[in-house]
Image 1 (spheres, helix red, strand yellow):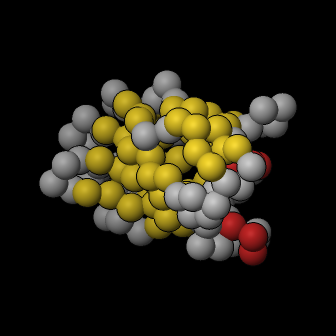
Image 2: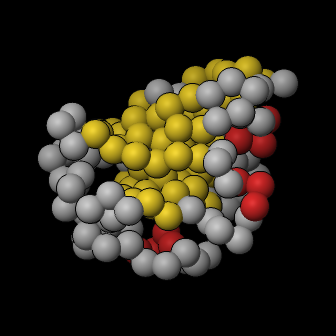
Length: 128
């Protein structure tokens, strides 16, 4: 599945940004996700969404509630990630990923292993 991210750039802290992922016509069929890799850290999942549009976030981290919003436009076949009130620690490469299945697994630290297709990423740099 060819995935192409866009929308990153240099952003001031406190602003919002919306990232896009073009999904090659499969957005309604597959579990998809956004991951982030920040400098010096391992890649981590940010949000997932089933083929039918059910979102999932890391419920164990209260600080992220409302910070990320995953959604998609079926007519444009694009998956989005909106990041609200950006903080410097949001700096990183953001990757779109797709699995082979319509449903998404429960949140876990090994979530990345569920996904087979990855985009090249879009860089978000947040300055204070």
